[in-house]
Image (tube, rainbow over the protein chains, first blue to last red):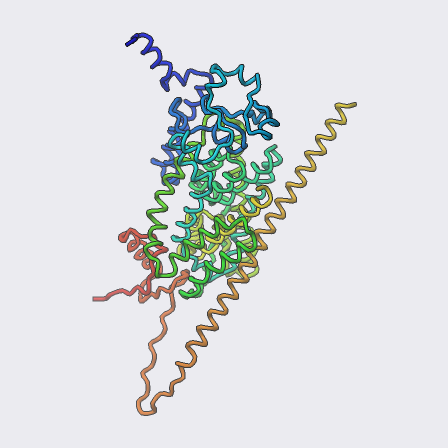
Length: 450
Length: 127
């Protein structure tokens, strides 16, 4: 046995994660680990959407540890662009920024054989025969070659986790307030203003259409919808968009109240709303069936999200599927939340995350949230006027779909103006309408840019 | 000259792209509004149909002629449901604020979200 202690120690040091920090761009990993720690602090100490933020933050931490190999960004890029992947060097045979392909495209299309360019051969240390090149990646290849987080990420990429979360949300949501006052749907629609303004702003700032659509949906204040749409349209932006969406959702009690106070008068805020009618059990059972059928017929691309949401709600309301409803609300929801959080966090690879575009996305996300609130409030004020002062405009801001946080904020602001005011159940109507509204907005963007 | 024309064409393309994006944004907002207004109409109609069916189902049972001998006892006065609530909780000598606190405490003790519980009535027990 040929054993040299110095060489062995030298190899150990060279291949350790610590050495990775001193490699080219390694400092970016350190910054991302610091970002992960900040997110963990916000999730644990400040309780900012902890169920997802803690998972995302830990995914960020794991994916940025050099050499861990839990997530392979290049492999997923190769999958998205549909180009060959060099598994030996973890490289996609295409430079998307410079639009350079490192293989003979014509020959590949004709024969299916990957012939590397001389430029690529010069850039690697191995002989061409030693390379493991995957011509067309599939989920099976990902499961074979990928790390733990790659495998978990398949559920995000296939659009499974957001839909399962929607099923759980449906099983947890009482649509009674919405059925009792269907005009709440107008507020849910109005509060999608930020989605389209942020989309427009992103185009003006130079983002491509698909990217702008994914950024805009942050204004829907709906994490699963944002993740679903971004995975379909701009997977490279998933990390920043998911972090922006969940962070702003957690910050709703800080973002919304100043806008609510600026756009409404004390008199408007103190309006006590009349009790809504009682909704029968049959109506609650028929509702998810009607909504699923109607909305999917109207915008077919909403089928995965609306279908899952309404199926979950039907399980809740039938009264004969309590076990399934319980599983959708608790066990399944918790498992999917775990997988979703950590695998979305895994996409925040330093080289992709630490760019000026991330800062632009975070700024546009804030604009989206603010204008969605403004849209809901303005239409709320209009309804206040049209109803002769019977509708409190504060429930308009709950049209952003962050359930139930936005409704709670309406309740708190209403009670500040009039301590005997109980707006919570009235605000729940626009709040759940916002979930349907953001799914329709996502369906529209998917139909246009998908 | 070439540079100037190139700059002009790039600016023109950008303006065209922005105009198209504006149009897509307005159309998108309109689609969301249109979809949800239609859904509102569907839900309103559904509610009316359900209400008429319920009324039709309860109608035949109601007008049973009462025997003339004994006068029927006066019906108990209907307790109004609590204001500001979409539910049907009825409050018997309990102020709104205390009712809200009681419901929140029950939800907390049961470790269940408030929107999963249905309160029928809250009554103060006087000793």
